[in-house]
Image (cartoon, rainbow, N blue to C red):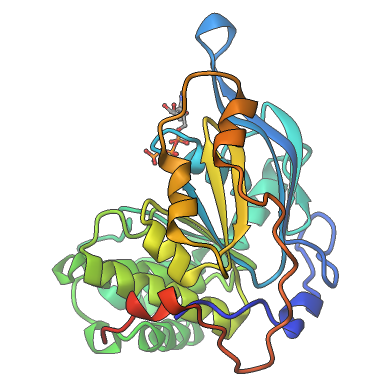
Length: 319
Ligand SMILES: Nc1ncnc2c1ncn2[C@@H]1O[C@H](COP(=O)(O)OP(=O)(O)OP(=O)(O)O)[C@@H](O)[C@H]1O
């Protein structure tokens, strides 16, 4: 199932940021303008994210592709306010990354759900309590034990587990679940934040193909149901083609591909991974450039599911 195009409702929704500017109707959720991150200084420094500019609109589901070391994780951590850009700027959910102070960045992180490759569940805690921890940002003081969470939070966490198909495992220790199940719990935990943006850093890298398809199908479904904007780094081109609206390809920290998935073929995307002779970034971009502009997607009619042929194959298996 390919995630349907962002809906008119999502595109016109108005959310108010707890800090920073309000996110107004139709505003991009992410707007990057020459965002750059350099590690180190002098001759040994490394340009991990190099002059990246793009926008992501409400409800868009975007896959971030690129070779290992191309800067995907660094870009995601910049968007989450975990690292400061070296130069350039970006606005995420109305917060300007380069100008925000620490409390504004903390507030931004509370509004961004983040799903990691390694799940980061607390293995000895129950599945339900792990999901409840997703609400910690909105609660005062530490919590110890499931019953220390307000009833409303516990109920919402159980609903979340229902959504990811794991309510029957609510009281099991988290470390007794399979990897795929643990990642679905991690998604439920991220959704407890009621995020305005979901970032995922290679969420299926350590899963088998079937579990990977389940997790990606889940992300596509919650994105659709909640009209949630998703930016997810991946190494699996087929999964990206199957569920994302759009692919952004990085090479040596630069955006060298920005295409809508509809109508694009696998071979074109695979050019992102071809050997490119060492040379200028422009040379790299030229080698993989494919219609760099992403055409505006038409708003999907409610309930409509545009489904490129590639979409169904990866998601035919049941839970
Ligand atoms: N904290 C850091 N200090 C120095 N260099 C770093 C740091 N974090 C990342 N890098 C470097 O920045 C470059 C981009 O790394 P990054 O992890 O963002 O790539 P990636 O595309 O996510 O790779 P992968 O697909 O393997 O996860 C790499 O050369 C990496 O070694």
